[in-house]
Length: 347
DNA sequence: CATTCGTGGAA
DNA sequence: TTTCCAAGAAT
Image (tube, rainbow, N blue to C red; front, side, top):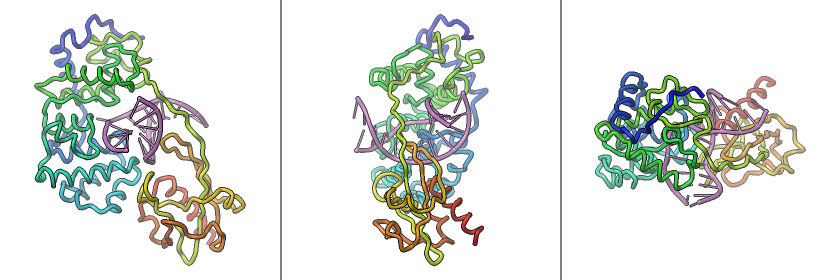
């Protein structure tokens, strides 16, 4: 491992650590749209979108700008209907985030007279806002001192202090938050928190970090950063099959709106029993992952009179000219495009 | 406290 | 190809 030997950890000289981090960030910090605003609403939207989601996805595919165009302020979002809200979120995943963001907007209007609370307790009281997001809004929007610990910060701190305890276990979580709070530059909370996270994306990245050019390498006592952080839990992936019916009638197809639970409110190909569909021709097959499952999605050509074509709860006939406008998960959308495209070519 | 909730890009 | 995992929160 090529890394300059450090004799001291950040807590040995916090002021020097903060200064080094701030200097580096002031010269190398990236220019994201949410760093150009101090509007807590715009900051919150970015933070919720970025939960477990990469910056490249949120920015590159236009989710952030599109969302703010459609819902420019708290009042607009609070009044948003499900379909338009989900359509704006389509492809981002974790769709519950969108609904909770709207509930937060409602709460700001109703409980705070339309003004975002500028304290941790007030922010934590809003739906979908946990410890990290509350600290992010506090520091990024209001530039007020509050620690944040996300995946980046956890990795950076575990390496700086050479802590091999599992970062998802309670004792290490407690230590991470305490350490983030102790290290926090209370004169420059926005810059400090931004810098700590960005250090985790650039130099102190997962796997093998780039310690040679790290601005705080002289504060980092880790011996083998590639082995950190340690994570305890990893669940086994389960393979499952999903059999769906492509049913057509008079320029319409049968689609099914999802009820409570996963991808609630979105439209999918109707899922049926494998035994009913497997005798029918297989039009398409693709794999996609969702949570701890690897799903093999099968699309069968199902005649309108077939028992599997019978309508069940949530099923509706949708015009072939209109289906693309619905809110549809990426896997189903891709399968539909492939299958209907083929049919159109034959016809 | 363990599990659930999506998706896609990169190692 | 498989595996990891990314600005987490709710239950």
